[in-house]
Image 1 (cartoon, helix red, strand yellow):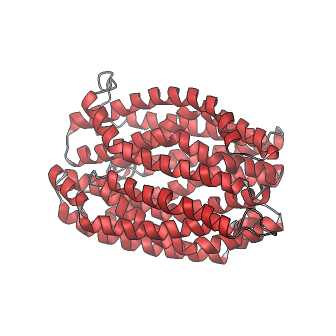
Image 2: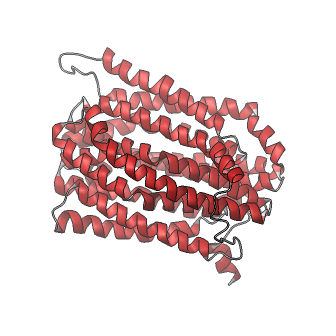
Image 3: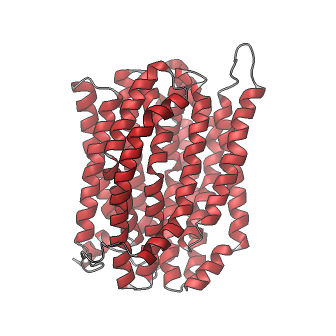
Length: 461
């Protein structure tokens, strides 16, 4: 019973060996990130194989706008996770209950707003991006359905963030695997059996994520030995709301920067035609898997640092940082090698168009070294966020994405225009991304060493 509780309940990361804490927390988190990535990947495989490259491009062209719609929830989730981990580490029960209840209510209100706004802006945004005619209607249908079901996606993100703040990375994993399996079957049912296209995979995603959200909510209400949710705790607390916004807003703005930049770059991608759009979406699906260890160790570092800062254990923070970066780099190197070796096979899972396959392999080789750089960026950013410094990672994201990546992408495309390539080389999309990742690692390391996060941690400790 005790072992079961430890495995499926809150995990106190202020005791035990830091590396053991990080590994125990990261393994289910890594599997969970894999399952999360499977949502979009299965959508792309089913659509690409059964509906063609135009439908695949429709799902891909929708990605940046979908991320833009979700950025508010990502911000709330980040702020909630940081506060939950710090209050849990400090054993402040009242603040812990109030934080969780406040965030659940804020998510519901935000979900209704995003649902209304999302459905209204989908068509104008797709027009603004000059989406190709053979992709346009399918992309609009996909995003409209996703917008209508946004509350389920939001609650899964928020609740899993809360559970991770408590040190429980296993329960969100189990719920996500259930939803992922359901999503696969629903994808095949709606697309293969019912003859739907991008709208079918959107419907499958909405249903599956709604179920995973419901399971997370049930789990939270049954963790009575750790939290006590009451009607009173669900009433938004002004102080907690402001702290959540203060901590989460920079992360939300970071996601907005990424999303807006992705939308601008998507317009450049669209100018290269349907084949390049299809190639880009497949490469970014593979990219999602390559990034998993980086995001995993970043999230693990946030929870570990948050709990230990709350407990005043800066000695454990320093040890955990060393262990986390080492582990992240090792796993990233192994996965990058696998992607380079099996790149052709990965591309052929999505499409049988040889032009798209070869172009995709070429693009993945351009990005390869960038994943090693991102291992450093994500781990150190996770440390800073766990200590309460969410502004510095936002600044780094702004510089690398807006100041470096976007001008580079358009600049390289402009300088490589020719009679054969009137819009420039498609390589510009990924060369600019690689350079921005490398610069991100350099800047994050500089800011980490300057130590603003240490001062914030000292104040909380």
